[in-house]
Length: 328
Ligand code: TRP
Image 1 (tube, rainbow, N blue to C red):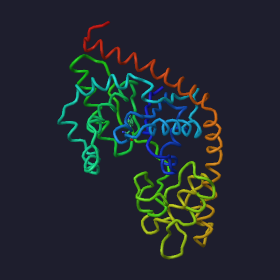
Image 2 (tube, rainbow, N blue to C red; image 1 turned 60 degrees about the vertical axis):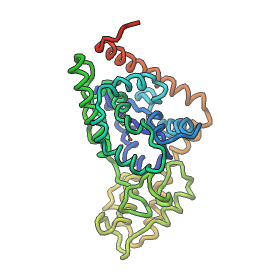
Image 3 (tube, protein in one colour; image 1 turned 135 degrees about the vertical axis):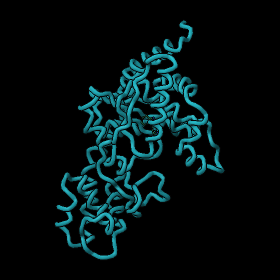
Image 4 (spheres, rainbow, N blue to C red; image 1 turned 90 degrees about the vertical axis):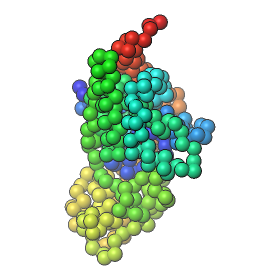
């Protein structure tokens, strides 16, 4: 079975856009691949420096991943810092990529420009080396990523090919694949922008763990369009179309079909809120259960780390041998 690696950073709470757009497909696709799902906490250190924050977010994100249905019997869910081979291979990757290549990464240029008055960690610059290690350790063939990460996959391929030509065939050269994208969920207050953690306010964001009253309130306040016709038309009616698409994703119907059942905005808003509440109810229940049983959660993560280490340590060993580092 194809080995697939997906990773997510534990920064900020998971929202409906993350879930319906991507995470839901981790779950629905897990039986068709040999899936490794990493919570990449070390990457989060590039932008977080307060003690305790990353660990808590990591725990919560792990609970969310199991709550949405990643099955520990089928998929390997692990935390990056539990698998020390990531950091170890990362150094080797840093020595296989050039300063010039890293300087051309648009994500580094954007992120460092935004942080002009803040501390810019060197890790923000060398980030692609750690990401290459994440991927190459697992001999992953396919890495489903969005457009913003494609350049990082390209550099990973370049690093893998350079390493293989310097030291002999060692790494699988991975390729970026289009993730199966689900719904394109837009900000409820700004339906022309994607629902995103980096929005300036979170009134247009629905979090996976929002309680039903908060969810309903956010939908009732959703920005709509100026006329009063309910029809699915992303270009001319972004607000209404977003509600239709969300309700469609939550119920498995088509947006057009849903549109035909409404003549007014009010009921569309509240029904969409209700549909999302129902969609999230079992996830929230499972989340609460998991968070109240830390021992179980830890044991799931320990099993994931041990499976991940089994593969990662063999790959690291292979890399050391290819280079010809002196064995102990
Ligand atoms: N850089 C990715 C992001 O910001 C997260 C990531 C880290 C990742 N390592 C990865 C994604 C390996 C895919 C494979 O979204």
